[in-house]
Length: 324
Image (cartoon, rainbow, N blue to C red; front, side, top):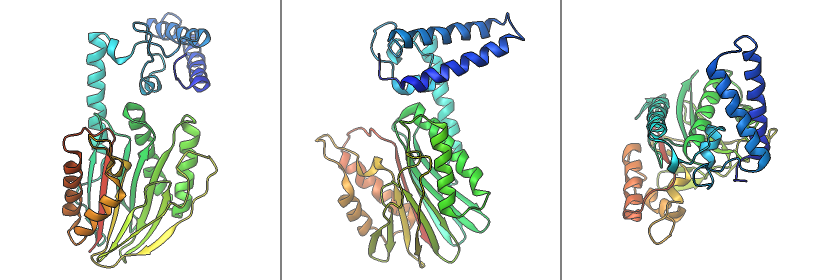
């Protein structure tokens, strides 16, 4: 059997079958519902005989993210029909457009803070989470990374976006906000999924509360001095009852908070060497006096020089937030 998520997939299919049977009691001859029921039954049969997750053409494993997005999939990407390939391309284009629309305004200047970010998926869609939200005299800052890549990760990223956007309006203490988001994420995703996250809340005096849920430590740039903010909890979704703590910082005019995902420090060149945190600290130190957009651009330029044409294999987000 392929490396598919076993029992959770079986449970999903059984639940889907039950719902289809209920709907068919009122529409017993609906051809679409009958076809879906046959496909669900066929998928359950494949789980029982050990062939679930294997392409019907080549008998190789179907891409895991494809199975998560569509548990009824029977073909790997290499063996889709032309019509299926066109449909998938159109779906990816739509998903990419939707994801782009969820990003916050670029070069946001609000409540005495100026922001700039760079956001780029390894493919058409990204599993990185990037958001800025002004609410009730606070600026909420979110940068995160969902486990995995591709369509499945992008779907979970959208789930995180909706979760935080709704929870912010409850005006919870930041640690409770992150804790509740983690429980919701844990309860609504597969056990193999989690997300690292930086969630911050800044006010107009320069005070910043930061919750680091297993993410790469953000950098605090105070004049020429650079500090890191260590993790204050495990990644979201690891344990449903995980509790989180905060660190509190005070930024003065000209100080910057710098956040990034692992697509920066773990990027590898053609020799297999990682960009690394030391190189990041060096480029940030050399450009710490620059405004956010130029600091981010300097990091991208440094990364591109390091890669020297090697392809990026991970999603990438970089964000700089300066106190004016």
